[in-house]
Image (cartoon, rainbow, N blue to C red; front, side):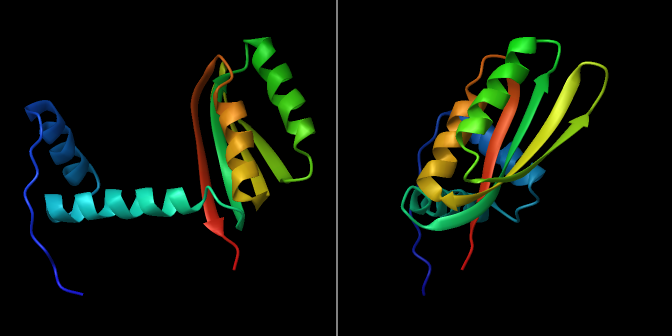
Amino acid sequence: MGVVRFSVSLEEELLNELDRFVKDNIFSNRSQAIRNLIEKNIVEKKWHCNNVVAGAIVLIYDHNKKEIVLRLNDIQHKYFDIILSSQHFHLNHNFCFEIIAVKGVAKKLTELSDKLISIKGISHGKLIMSKTD
């Protein structure tokens, strides 16, 4: 497939962010970075279908906020059919790192992830998925 050139207009601040992204991810140029971002977006959109996928939900939170732990457990019990396993790590005295291994229909994994990540007090959360076939 041939390469097609086009121009893009960006605000200076967004262009600076793109350049940082290029540097941080060791891309050879802006085009490679933009290509990567577009491909990533296309793949993630495909996950919003009924394909069976496997993945991990990664969470970081302050365990001193007890309602977080209760909410995490409550939500996870409602999705027992797609949760394979979970691991809990203590990063320091306050913060915990949790990895939840999941397998199921992509939409349901995304639904679970969205519910967990949106809990007030979660400082970081991300869903990583991959097709199983």
